[in-house]
Image 1: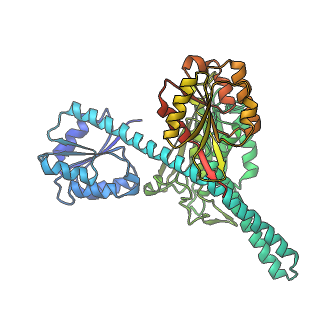
Image 2: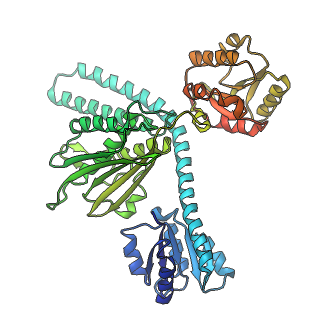
Image 3: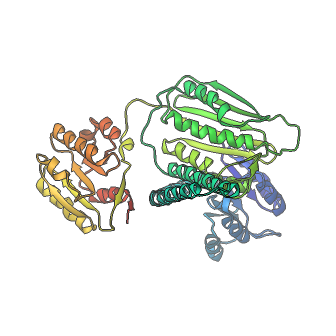
Amino acid sequence: MKTKIFYIDDERVNTLLFSKKFANTFDVSVFNNYQDFCEALTYSTPDVFVLDLMMPDVSGFELTSYLRNTYRFRFVPILILTAMEKGENLEKCFLNGADDFMRKPPNYQELQARLESLAVRGKVREEHVKSRKIDSMQLMINGFNHEFNNHLTILHSGVEVLELGLTEEKHLKKTKMLLKTITRASHLLKDISKLYNSERKIISSQGICEIMDAFVSNITSDLEFGDVHFECDVKSENHKIEMSGSNLQVVLKALVSNAIDSYYNIGDDRKKLVRIEVDSTDTLIRIKTIDRGRGIPQRDLAKIFDPFFTTKGALGGEMIGDRRSGTGLGLSLAEVLCSNVGGVINVVSTVGKGTDVNLALPIAGDGFRFEDARGDFKLLKNNRDNLRLKIFDSREDAGLALKYYLNLQNYISSSYSTLEDHQERLSNDDYEAVVMYNNFEWDQTKACLDFLRETKGRDFPVFILGTEEELGTELEYFVQNNIGVLIFDDNYMRVSEALSSIAIYYDI
């Protein structure tokens, strides 16, 4: 897909030349006045803006500020293309939020390179912020779920006890409504808990054709289609994917549910059809969900993956028949499940004409990679004291050096140069993470790691250090047992960074 460029300049000669130069390279839209520019933004969001500075209806300075203060354009790069001198103009443009500055007439080869670079930079910036959002939300939700679920359980039990002492129908009706509300809140909590729990490497037990057959069989009973027709066309070999079949069905159910709702109160006689198309390349499964319903406004497209955001009313969604249309979590969950396995979800929509949702998921490859063995650890602590570690390294001096470094980082560490008494050392609760160098006999190392998983559980933080050559032979074991692998060359900072990634919440 070509990079989409929006260029506004009141001089028609400039916009015509720009279009001629880049028509084959980019998807170019040019504008000579602010009104046309704004109208086009109602229906489309570009990958890069190119702005003139001196225009009669709005200056480039003002327009840059407007764009930077509009939610859906916050990551879209802006290049200023002007005949004005740099100097103060350059500083003012950057202060208002511009990303690049060129003078007219430009060197078009250089301009093309800058536009291509800006488009990539904008996508990287957006992905980085999304990744930071997921990391921070994961930490918050770990604690939130633990605390809030306890309160819901107590509340549910209290209402049930209260109900036993009631006899009047009107009071019983109110308690039943309250229990229903608590149940809905509990389901909502379960949806939230799924949002930011990264999925370890999983390969589907079934191929994509079998998964889609099961989905089609289940979806007609799970959702109310009413007068909406449903089609599914699979033109793919039966590849396995790097996502569980059940998680893919969760994603597709959210997409189909939204597509059905898009026809509610549509107000014309268009054909009400939801269609899924599945095909594949050598490396990807591509799934498209298509509806021709109400569509999504451009201003909302930038927010549709945000938790609790819904285009269908306030929290809980609008009433469709006798049910709520949704909580605003469906697309958030779909995006996270896809991104956790290296997939991509993309939405293209036009108001009044419908929506296409495109999924691209990796076909399962053979074997494991080092990035599959990063570890996914959750730790419940009873206090806010510094993290306590046990370090195992057969080289006593090296183990002590790592211990002293980690002590400096406010970790409380003990180091050992033998695994002979590992069961005794690891049976107590005086530590909250283990760091082990892979320089023991493998039988000893495996016995120690197996003991940790049996006694401390799968989520307990365990990191193993070594070279690619040392660790690569046992990579499958590390992935399957959720052992964090660190390629280590005495770069102690990698260890402290890994420890800081542990999701810790407190039971106090």
